[in-house]
Length: 225
Image 1: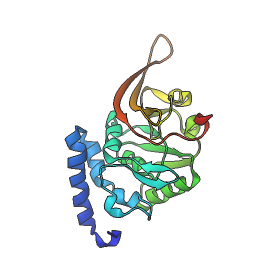
Image 2 (image 1 turned 120 degrees about the vertical axis):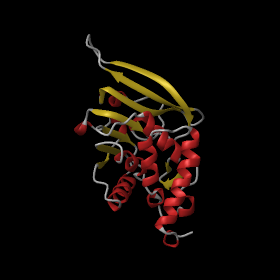
Image 3 (image 1 turned 90 degrees about the vertical axis):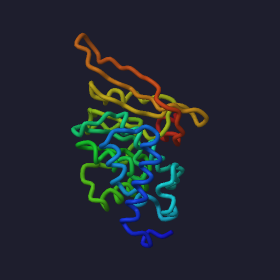
Image 4 (image 1 turned 135 degrees about the vertical axis):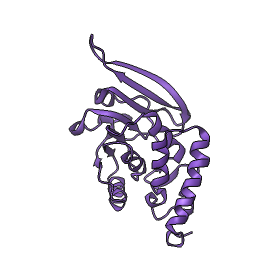
């Protein structure tokens, strides 16, 4: 199936059906998240070598450089667990093709998306620009260190798995703030939620809890050392 053989109306129908069956039926309820998932055209974030017919399949898809565009349900689940109100500044660690950042752009004030791989950073920028998304900044850098120029962040989302949450990310998280990250190795990973809350008597309180089992590509860069 080629992109130009499918009308925008048909893509919209396919997208709405996918959101209902893959996301709503699994328990995601936030109406703003669901609206963003219906609005953002996932098929426009795929590299040419990936068949557009796969765009709304219920799975992650390769985008080159051993990286993936995440399963739509996981994208929506992360967005919901960030508990977004619309006024936040969000750091995304791992821009990939820009799809998760595009979803977040509909839900928050500003998104900073850090990508280690230069070619993917360019690809993400191009995809976001094509959709006239202007509240996302894509930066080529190692997400292990976060992105100090725009810190602190109200929310942080990691889209690659690590053995631990980098200390820099917790340090750059506001209090109150939320951080969602896949933690583990290639055989077993858990999506976790870190909440940072103010403490009038001293340092902010940081708590962590498990959410769901997941399977993300491993984080690259300094964390491998």
